[in-house]
Image 1 (cartoon, rainbow, N blue to C red):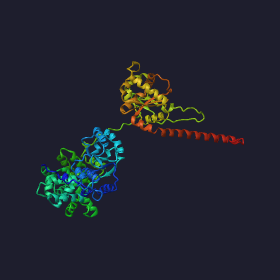
Image 2: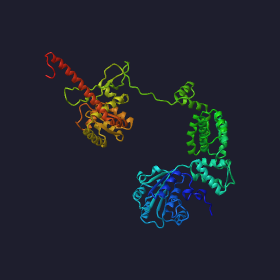
Image 3: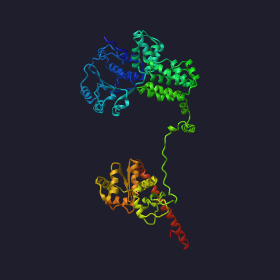
Image 4: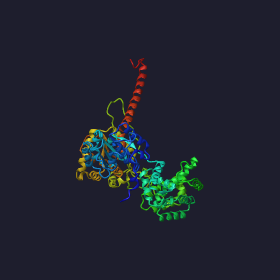
Length: 622
């Protein structure tokens, strides 16, 4: 007969044999004693802390015929023995990790409508409940909300956040905590006594540390070691690939002395012995935390892995705790996930013992870069940054060349509003961009020369992005919904047409921008386009400054709905969304400017009128 593992053999059958989870145990016992049994529970918490065991104990206790103290299972009656032997038909356990579909849930829904066969309550235990599909949750929702009076649902999960909120709101949630060291030690000592296992006290403490609060893990570790006659700390280190504290202290000594070769030899030796580098780094982090805690509190109460002599030895090394902890924390996850943990460990050894690396960690980046540059140590590794593009300056008079450039007027365009004439605001000045054609020499530009150099204009155009964004904002404040919709439809039609020789320049551009350009908004004077690609935006803005292009552009759309002064510009899509989100704010700014202008001018007129009336001894009221 196969041996039964310790965690199965010593799984608790009643509340009195449970280690830990005192608050949850008291709550369930109180509900049984007062006969206030909930219809649905969610048991959530880390693995191996007793969620499924509590579910089975609770099912046994509420169906027990002769309860101990009125709330705990006796484990002797017919109902208790049938549940313990897993023969009770009214206790249904579903492993949602394996059976997570809607079909399994439908079977439960059909089964729940039948009365219990032999027990007072039908209990449905769904383990790993977070693995159920959305369809399964939807099918189960109504049954959990209004189950029969004899049905109890218990959902056990390690990932509570994955359960739908509609299910959570209909259940009583109980959060299970990790077992503390005292509870784990008591459990191990109980099992050791029952199994007659010879084990040292230090070994029990080590198993508790490795279990990390999980009772099942603690018993599994003990089960692995139980085949040996005597369990001590040395045996645990050999079986699980751990090392003694003296090697860890020696590791830190080599780090303090920046002894790369000695530390590399130690790591190679530990690798041959099959040591887990991930656990080694975890222990080193904990040792440094213990040292820092001792330095801050001067007490051994919170120290976990070191004794007083070991602490004093490490303190005498004078380690840079912050630097070493930072490197260890960064290397920890890399070593854990890497298939070449030895390589990651060797990189860590270099970082810990490299004086330049120590310098890097202790000085600000800017100061360090200045020092390294002054010493010319890392010139070949410096990133090469391209110079920022500066606006083209009008060249000094030199000999005449054929180069022609276009320069925008970057001065802000004033908005003049006359309050006396209550007419719509003329936005022609808002969207007009003054383009100046000039040569490098102080000589007039001939028309035929401009036509000759058309192919070179594009590369010499200087685009003022701030001016473009300003124009886009002004267009948004006075956008026309009807014109925008009209232009959207026309734009789609034009993009689908074939290339026409008459408008070859325009259509060629549109074929390039078909998949990247969209219409942002349209006003009486301006069409604003947008794109995710900066190069496309720049290309449109360059070609849009050509008067011939603008005439051809609007001729293709065959519409007279636009003002005489028209402009086509493009902006980045992200900038367009940002501007559009502040549309109301931009409008308020312009309206306030207009109102302030009206008030100032009206006040000035009233003052002039009052001065004139004073000459005739009249007032404004008269």
